[in-house]
Image (tube, rainbow, N blue to C red; front, side, top):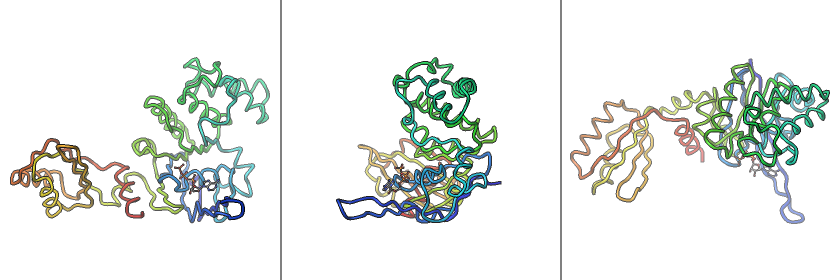
Length: 327
Ligand SMILES: Nc1ncnc2c1ncn2[C@@H]1O[C@H](COP(=O)(O)OP(=O)(O)OP(=O)(O)O)[C@@H](O)[C@H]1O
């Protein structure tokens, strides 16, 4: 069953250019995707692709100009009040808190505005602070302005979890976090999905998305480019192996030309590294075939293979191939 359904969604921003002229930005041209219940779905795309706009429409903060979107079967426009009760949202981890209040006080204040009784607000604030690990960091009683970015991200997620929502909409929740904090947030999201929550997350860190997302939608310039599980995206592109070779020697360019002729190559990237070059090729051949060809070719030329790795392609490889095809 789908927790989120987005069909042919459109959004046009109108902003001013000078005093009179209006500027129209077609942020979403036609976005369609679904997210199944209890899964983590990632929206990926370059800057300005329309990810935040999509999340804002699903959060009922922005109205679409066309198409429709629903959360748990509720329309985000006509049933916006009901949608708000069932979702938790993080749009900017550093916004929405009073700097001089502690994390705990911020949450209690937020809960009172939401209509919780004082005792329920205090109880739930302690629960969520404990759940996201701020209580254990002895941070819940410290003023918010003393929080690190990692603590702020945790507090923003605690706030999103306050009403125990079934669906979480998170716009770049790990932006700017250090390795440890980002890892903690990732684990939190996986635990939440395991407990039945549906999570829609945006981000730019492909490694991170590949670790957590069950499915992915890639958008660019307001249109869908591809969607599916990370594995489906990679196999659809026929990306079988990524071969990285670091070589030195005079015949480096010859090696590239020969490789292009003998290996079934999808793409080749060459990076100059001073005395050496790094060649990355995406090939459909088997590992054995690739290794054999490389060693045979390099024996005939004036090149020295300094490093060789043959790996499975990553989500980032698939993403770059897809974005490259469409740009
Ligand atoms: N309030 C606004 N007024 C005018 N144009 C806007 C507004 N908000 C966003 N845009 C434009 O809409 C397009 C989509 O923006 P959006 O923020 O949704 O992209 P994004 O994929 O989230 O990008 P990023 O990865 O940089 O956060 C961009 O061209 C952006 O400049």
